[in-house]
Image (tube, rainbow, N blue to C red; front, side):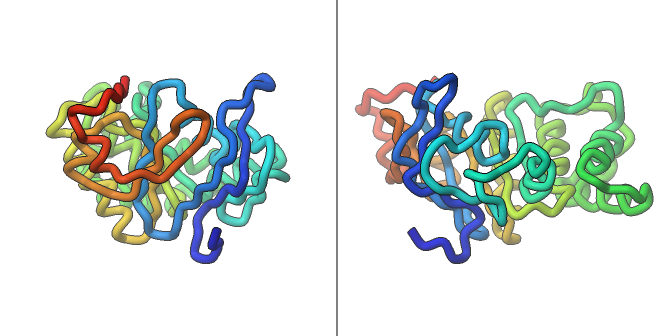
Length: 239
């Protein structure tokens, strides 16, 4: 496995929860500027892999690294610094309903070490502009559509200028047209050099925006040809 020009890599890895093996023999890497899909059935272990990458679960066996952080030696006090290197976008947005869009972004910045209010405001306005929502910075999440809320979530993931973004089912709660808009935003971000690992069940989105794909199956992760997953005669169910 070539480790030059990589954002993260895991070699011969194993992930466990409550001493149960979730994934084994993991050999995966994400290169700088890459957009990669992660697919698999519900409960296959996709989320467990993502949790290892942002420090919520340990890498039980093998070797691995995210940015400059060794996943086998990661200490709790290092996790906030690891999370400044990456951004996470969730299916359910996870915005704070009691504060404006701008205050949502500032909350994240404060929790990751930003101090100066003026610098925070400038950065927040910049990332909101990148996702086309600079005119809605003073609105509250409940005043926004689902697609707009997901754009805010993407902006939040970008505030610390991350090396890569983990997108966990970012189109799962959106209609097809809005999903296309969100995918266009994510691909534009990748073209600017920010790597993206996106877990998804949305085969139609993958067909419209084809890219490198890893599949979680039988406790392992393999690279697949995504076009094979669109075969209507294959008995694969994604829930």
